[in-house]
Image 1: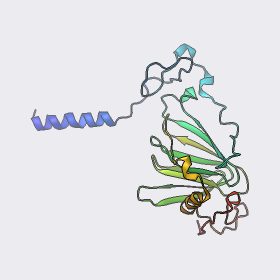
Image 2: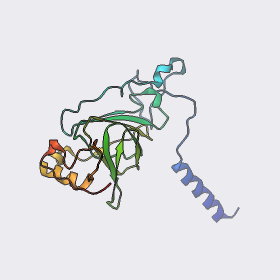
Image 3: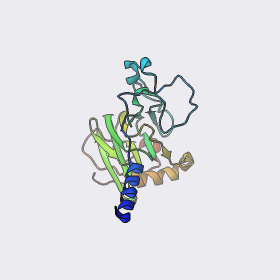
Image 4: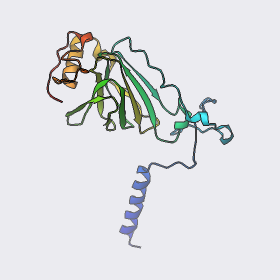
Length: 227
């Protein structure tokens, strides 16, 4: 075989191997949460097959709303394979976000996952920023869905008159969260700058949308344009 062709085949095979995302080697592999982890692998150890039950594939941890009493008046409950055994090896995580009136999801990224967001209740403005610093934002009502590409900064605001609830699915069993430091929100001037950059509320006829200002942040002046 020609040596150049052989080298090409070897390199191509190695690149393909390094980029591969391996499929499951068995049907199910719920996380074994009963033992202290002593071996650290890219994933989590599985339960013994004789100790797998239907309950491993159900969770009630997203049933109840989180505490939204403190700034930024929102609460995130994220379930990974460490908390929900049935997710192990499936490449999925699930989350619930609760937003009180005027609540916000501060800008953050998931370095290992894209996110699909579904609004269960309320009215939310959600968006993300690409690497060219272009902002893509949409207004979502109950039953509507949007997606955030992997690794991009994204955010959300409750712009309705009522409590909002959002559910998300992320395509990694350990998506990771990188947040802007809490120190960035230590004063109203910084919050004002944040909101001016990441939210624009249109002059809408829909009575379910509050007009112009997030009342809890009465110092903020929010720009308007049609969405």
